[in-house]
Image (cartoon, rainbow, N blue to C red; front, top):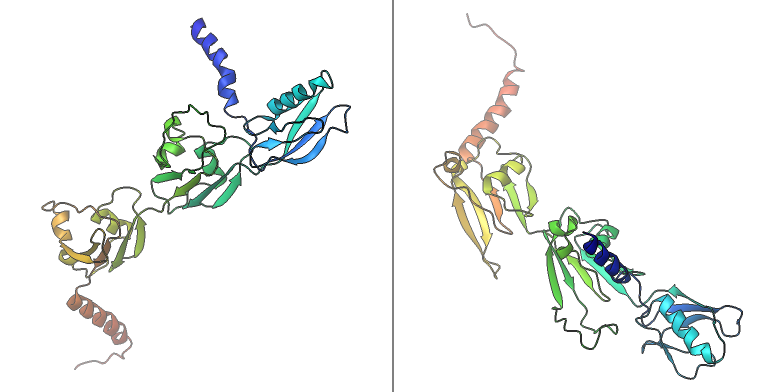
Amino acid sequence: MKTIIAILLFLLPVYAQDDRYRIGPGDVLDIRIYNRPQLSREAVRVEGSGMIRMPLIENEIQAVCLTEGELAKEISTRYARYYKNLQVDVFIKEYHSKQVAIIGAVNEQSRFELQRRVRLLELLTYAKGPSTKAGQTINIVHSTAVSPCKQTDDTDTSAAFSSYKLSDVLQGDPKSNPYLETGDIVTLPEADQVYVVGNVFMPLTISLKEPITLTRAIAMAGGLKQDTKKDKIRILRQEPGTTVRKEIMVDLSAIEKKSSEDLALAPNDIIDVPTSAGKSFLRSLVQGVVPGVGQLPVRVVP
């Protein structure tokens, strides 16, 4: 047990280092040198090459991929030939090098400038979470640009696109909660939908966040109204890869009697619940006539 604790304590600085922000091209720095105001500089923009220049130092200084403390130490070392034990402080004034974006079915689509490393779940919280239309998949489109901080012998061959199950991300599953990299675009597609129309109490659109059957969809629409032709429920289903829809006739009464299987719905299905024309006409006639009869005067038949 003591050995395991010792190993974790040894690795702790390494893990902590992963969260530190590393300077990138376009960032703006303030460099302050104690008791040497003539050397201090404000608003130093890191060039696209990742380099900066300082007074008296002949060559450029690499700033990209370093933390504030590491760059301060490097600058102090460069000045060692002129001043011993020079105290240097570096502050990032403006962050411009690390941008990510989140779009799609979230409550607040936005682009973010990262001032530290951020995981997928945290970015999702900044976007105020998934919207009610969100599906169960979240994707990351990775930038094709090579990070200047990658090691030359890096063997990472990860694809430019990765996909995760939204429920796993929301639970903080480490395998589904990666750190975001510069240029990443997070997309949260809307769930596929089905539509319930016709002789139901609440015609509606249902997001297919999980498998849904015909009977459940009708129940979600408030159920059937009177005079429904239960043996003639019509489903219009789009053929994959086309705009053509085929018609599927379903006997709901048979499903209720367990003599037929409930039908699993497919994306973009339209459920049309028909009315029995004869019964509907008779009911409307009775409803229209009966109240009027009640208003007539009463006469006695001798």
